[in-house]
Image 1 (spheres, rainbow, N blue to C red):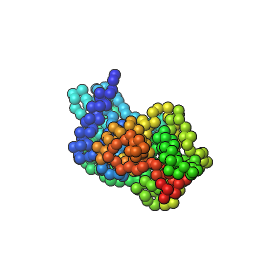
Image 2 (cartoon, one colour):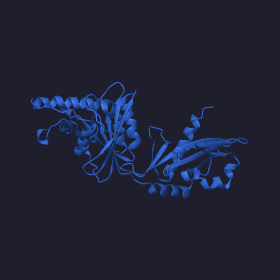
Image 3 (cartoon, rainbow, N blue to C red):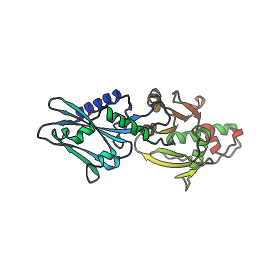
Image 4 (cartoon, rainbow, N blue to C red):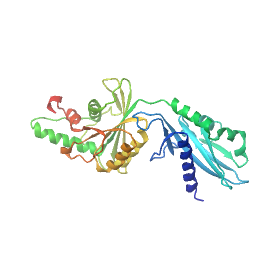
Length: 327
């Protein structure tokens, strides 16, 4: 039996009820850790509280039991499950369960299981979980309690970075023909990009840098370093560096990473490819903000979106050995 129509019906019913109680909801384009929907504190904020919502749908049939299962790894303070049920007479119900509720279910092999039937749905336990004004208030309180993380994430399309370093050397070779340029390592490049364009400067914050490479291309323009896993900035920020290779198109992986982080992180995107333009316009239409680091128009810029942006040539100029007055 195809359960997809029921799951869509469940999610649509859930969205209508959340909107009824004035929740702001978003639909992520990824499904990680049970994230069917997000309830966000403010769509138009660089940093926002959010709840991860998983939607479940089940049909109630007499003399037949059903269940839902939640992996233990999903449980977090901001994780909530909604169960939509519809019986043979088309009566609908919506139940809400927090992580604390889920921890009281039967546990086996890494999963929590809640079993029920048409009779058990009428029990006191389920009546207390029936989504109404009381639980809507509880949900709003849970959203307020979520801690806002003061993170900045730098997401780098490594194919573009390779092209940008080579372009930078070419540009400044024409200006300073006698200059000998150095081959920078990844940490140097990241430090210079952050120094120029991290508008979210803060003391003792965490900056996560994700360098996404294709298995078919290497970063030959960079020198290797034994300390590419992270460093401390001059303002005391901890920078963590994560490098990954993909068989897929790099832009797809980059966009998925943005989707995963944008509701809770300040995003700096180092990329310049027309494949990004339409998805980025979608983020802008939803009131979300990104700082773009790319080429200027004279160097062959391919992305035109109404975000704040910076010219990649300047920090890379410093990375290859120029002084600021030489840029």
